[in-house]
Image 1: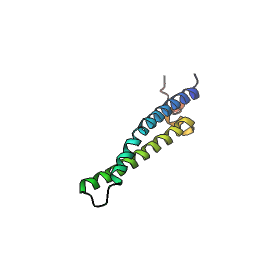
Image 2: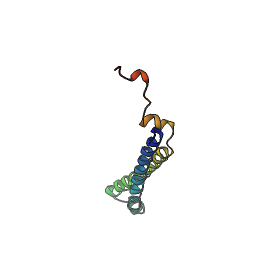
Image 3: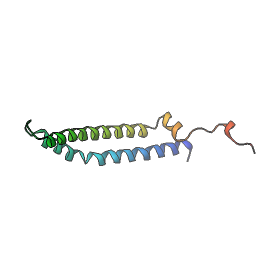
Image 4: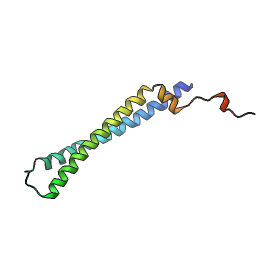
Length: 101
């Protein structure tokens, strides 16, 4: 296996991990959206605890969507395996860095 093939293999494996994590996080989305909608549909004259849960659920939905988006972007970066990924995963070995025998 050549160096380039090894980098592509590792990069695609990391991409698959990111995609699976994004899909697992997406399973939490319905629960968080329903909790948000529950508190969002309450009348405005509510207790402080209900307002607190409305704010917390809003932040929870927002951060989950941002997390899924970041994971999907990371998936695309690793799947395409650009030159930056190649330099990061396996830097080139210079002849000046080799120890003298």
